[in-house]
Amino acid sequence: MIRLLPMLVALFVPALAHAALNLTVRLDPAAATAPISGRLVVALARDDSKISSKTAMTEAPFWDDWQPVFGTNVTNLAPGAAITLDDTADNNLVPISQLKPGRYRAAAWLVAARTTSSWKTEPGNIFSREVRLTIPDPKAAAAAPPDPVLAELLLTEKTSARPWPQAREGVALVELPSKLLAEFHHRPVTLRAGIVLPRDYDPKKTYAAVYEVPGFGGDHRAALTTAARRSLTPATNPAAARLEREVFWIVLNPESPNGHHLFADSDNNGPVGQALVSELIPAIEARFPALRAAPSSRLLRGHSSGGWSVLWLALNHPETFGAAFSSSPDPVDFRRFQTVDIYAAKNMYSDDAQPPTPTPSFRKGDKPVMTVRQENWGEMVLGPNQTSAQQWHSWQAVFGPRIGDRGWGNGHPAALYDAKSGVIDHAVAERYRRYDLADLLRTSPEKYLPIWRDRIRLVVGDLDSFYLNEAVALLGAELASRGVKDSITIVPGADHGSIYASPAIARFPADMLDYIDRAAPAPGR
Image (cartoon, rainbow, N blue to C red; front, side):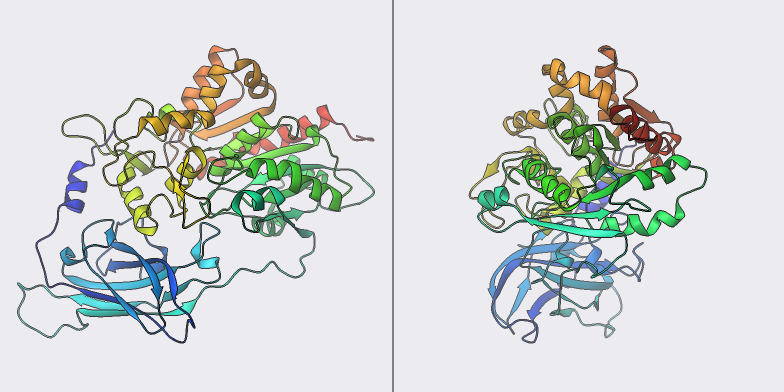
């Protein structure tokens, strides 16, 4: 493993004090008619960074070149009022007073409403346009800076929801208020799915269904993309073309105020899996009677967080679903939570070596480019106490217990590790065993082994960008020791994205059709 300590020292050792930046954010009276409370975030990027000038500052934190981001909670910020950020604000690199001299771009946003992982598509949030500022170098010759050190960001722009298209041939939307989740959260919750009808759909025929769970940040709108891509189905894969004619492709919405909920019933997200199988699927099948209402006719497909979701659903709801086809799933063995054994390791951010080796989180090829500490410090700025709705916080919301009252903004997921230091709380880690797929297999093989053997196909690259292959390898060894060797394929040289081009993924349509044909052959085939 490449040691990243020199890079981290350069990032985290405070710079010499420079001219302090007076960073003020004001709420435009034209953008709000009443006081607003929420999480205020300010992001900066130096002109000499790797961040393209075409990249919006609201995309921060940036993985390829870690730039300063600051966050603080605000309460009842009145229209026209301003708040000045100082060194008490959470930061991912250095306090505001220790920013290095240079020219920067900057933007701010105030998250007052959150029901998904993306504040940008949530009505009720406000953000600024980008501004430019300069922090002068006191060692340089005295000269008037091109931009003032006094920087004010004006919150003027409002976010809005993304509407579903009014009409799109071959695609439908199913929405359903969930009684189960409304009772849990004490607020209305809507279940959604995008339905792609079979090519040359005939309502007099019967069809199987593939239920897709998108990866992190995706939702039911991916059905629109799936339908649009059908004209690009390669002639070299006739099974894929046949699958388009013989199944409904149903894209589920896994979003929640805590990010991707993985369709696993949990202390923080509530009975999301149960709501799917007992509320949404019956509603979909009632809307489309051509769907065969049998487990053998309901297949699952997912990648990344969606890949973990379909494994969980197949293993825990075999009465509802048949086969599951997963690629590059989130950690399936928590002895490798990416690369960390959460049951035995002391710290999530580094190992016990002297000097310690920072734990990598993201790599390109075999080169680490981001650490777990960096990613978590970025999430901490976006939302303290595991409330950013981003990847690491979403995992803690699914797998861990809850602290405080239900509802975003009140209670919050318990921390698996200290956000600043990375020290692991092993009492919380033990609670994660409920969702550790490999641990469930070890403790209840009679329940789970037949499903792994007969109903699951899992593919991952051995250079997965998030090191997810390490957990899959441990699970694969466990399955092999019990005589199951065909459920998992590890593809040499493939990463989190390039795995899609692998022959193993290309075989999924044929394998799906084979399962459907064997389990529920249609008349006339």
